[in-house]
Each structure stands twice: as C-alpha cells, then as structure tokens.
Image 1 (cartoon, helix red, strand yellow):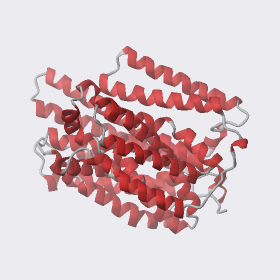
Image 2: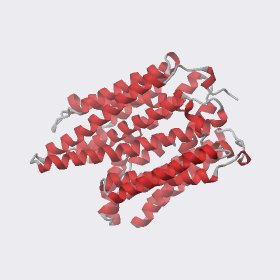
Image 3: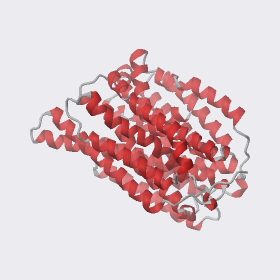
Image 4: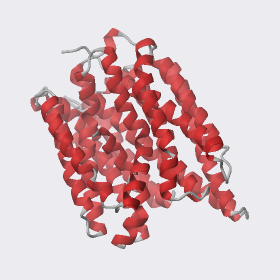
Length: 456
C-alpha cells in the first residue's frame, strides 16, 4: 500500500496528455490533477501522526486506506475536470492519513534489529523507487489500456491492504484524546502546510510573481503562529523539545534534501528521455526500470546487512555519495545519449544509492525515546519528505525551464537548450546530496539505547 501511495504522486504525470484530451481539460488547469493530490497529501501529515498516537495508529491507517481506495475509484470514473481534481484531493487526504502513521507501525511491530532492518528496507524501497515505478506503471497502463486504469489499479490493492491491516496490525487504543489534542495548533499546522504546498506548486507552475509569493508568506506566517502556539499550549501537537534529538533532527533534514534531489530526478530524467533523447513515453518508462531494480536490490538485500554492521551516519553518507555520483553523471548526458554508456550508469547509481539512503533516513527520523511519540515522529518524517519532494520538483523544474528559456533567447537550438536546462537541475540535485553527506557526518550519532524504541 505504501508503494501505491508514493507511486500516485508520479503515475499521473505520464498519462496527463490522455487525460487532457479525454476530459477536455484546459492547459491552465491540467497541473491541478497532480497538485490537488499533493496539497491533500501534505496538509494533514502532522495532525494524522499525532492522531495515531491518541486514537490508535491502526485506526488512522485503515481510515486512510479506505479513503484512498474510494477516492481512487471515483477518480477512475471521473467525467469532468472538476470531479477529477476534487477526487484527487480526497485521494491525497486518504494517502496522507495512511502514510503519516505507516512508519510508526513498522517501528512498533518490528523490534528485533534484523527484522526491523528488512522492514525499513521495504519501506525505503517504496520511497526510493516510487517515482520511477509510477512513471513506468503510468506509461504501461495508459498506453496499453486507458488512463482510467492508473486509478483503478489502486482499488484491489487498497482492499487487500485493508483486510491485511485489520487482520495483521494489532489493535492499539492510543493514549486517548483526553491526553490532549491541540486544536488551534492542528488548525494552524494543517492550514499552513496546505497553503505552503499550494504556494510551492503554483510557484512551480507560474513563477515567482508577487501574488504567489504572498501566498507563501501567509503560509510561513501560519506556520510561525503554529510554532508560537507549541511554546504555550498545555499539550502541544509537536513539543518544541521533540527535535532536540540530534539524530532525529538530522534525519529529517537529510530526508528533505534527499527527496528534494532524487524525486525530481526520477521525474525529470523521464522528461529528458522524451524531450531531448526522443524516446516515446512508454520507451522512457521501460528505460527507467533499472533505477527501480537497483533500488530494490540495495534496499531489500543490502541495507539490512549494512544496518546490522554500521551506524546510520556511515550508512547514510555512503549511500548519499553514490546518489551524488549518479546525479553528477547525469549532468554530462549528451543530446543523443547511448543508453548503456550514458543513461544506464547514472540511473543505476541513483537507484542503488537511494535504496540505501531512504531506509537509513527513516530509521534516523524515527529515533524516539518513547514509543508513545512514534506516531508524531512518523508524521514529522512524512512531512519532511513531502516538503522535500514538492519543493524540489517545483524549484528544480522552474530553474531548468528558466535556464532553457534564457538559452533559447540567446539563439541556442531547442534540443541543446533543453539539455542544458536539465543539466542545471541535475547539478543542483547533486549539490543537495553533497550537503546531506556533510549533515550526516556532523549531526548523526552512533545508535544509543536511550534513543532506540523499546518493545512493549
């Protein structure tokens, strides 16, 4: 289920032309088929994580999966652009509820180090390869059947996930609503995050004009009010001392930087293959299969072994260096690349490194002193990942487009202008991965019994 939640961010991208043609969607509204999901997904992550601690993570997860599944069905049968955009928002809300508590469920269910390593490796794979799997699945389904099936495919998976969750996830009543839910803080956080996600996506679509910047400033004001509220609330939604744990704080910062570099790369390399190298959408999707395969091998087979032998600092640094190497190779892609020589090494390195980094980041981000805070930690980690990939996609695509436009104005041929625009984005992504290496070495500590969730 985690895979489908992450995949749904990118699966629609490659089917947009078919959706636009079938539903007669205006070009100005087309991006909202993706943006509506992103806003719904990001807005409730912090609140959902805390609700998991209060009323039970199992309850929140099942509610999220149910909402995601129903909304997926409605998206598949959508007969107008308004219906599709509305159901995509609801789909994002359901995804956010389930995703926010998923990592805390893994941490509390798997207490033995090797088992936890395998479980985190599987979760890490969904994050590392989700975007590329989405591009592949979207290409196959929209071309072989129709765009409706990029939504219908979620329905049987959601039903199976619901049944398994009911049967396999132990009941947990949580600490109870009487423990306190900071309602004002929840409103400020939800409004601030939703408005922030909205600001990021419209800035990515329309540039840094004054109305868009104003929306971003309002979002920052709301989030600033949220922080002030947490300092005075009797039972804060996010206690300000929560992030004093250096490993947890460092893990979330690295999460932002990693998703801000790898998720945009997964999407932009598909665009590079189509717009510069001349691949069809389906050929581009198939060409990216090694990225997902490399991520699967390292996250499912290699990471559990590394986690049992090395601390998170060295594991993260090694994985990030591999990611940065792949991104740097991508900055040298020619306009007429040879797949085996030019494309394959870059995407394989990014996939392999991401497969190590993502589960290690999750482990660091979930390093809580008390399992009663696991849901909160999961919500914070999910939020940091959302901020990273949303801001990363908007920023890198905007910078690439601006650089391309400048080069076209200077008279460069379109294909070479596009190539150089993508190169700039890949270079910035590599720099972000490099910064993450430094943070991993400076902030993360060796695992400590005081910071490791104890079984209960």
